[in-house]
Image 1 (tube, one colour):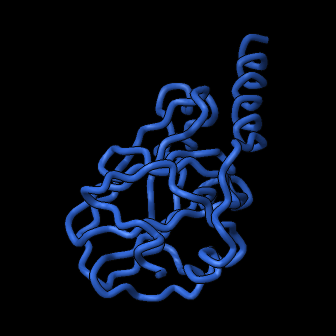
Image 2 (image 1 turned 90 degrees about the vertical axis):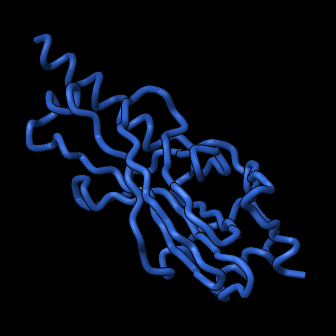
Length: 181
């Protein structure tokens, strides 16, 4: 009976995360349309990020967990599965990762290292690696899933809405207004 109750509680947490949306500030349609041209910048690198990959989940469904996109451990955007962000970065080395915006499930954050050059355009998506799935739901209680990032194709971004960055340090971010005007 205890196992069944534990199972129901754990599944409820996962389902609540997937169904929850956080308020976001959508970007101007002109800026969204511009970024969907996937233009290569001249003096900086451009990184596209979206959450919601579920290649390791049952039925390949997007996980839908609202998440924070982190660059060098700095939260630059909080987004839902149907959103994306674009960050214009100075050339250099960066660590990118994501973390859930909800605090009810543990994740092991696995950063991805990027070495960006001027003109680079990178497309990234958050992923959940259920490395403990072979041990069943009991395994999830002891071995948390990994929050990883992987490279993807740009067509994933066409059906999503661009949101504004929450904040981005001037030390490594260019503003979108500078890039478009």
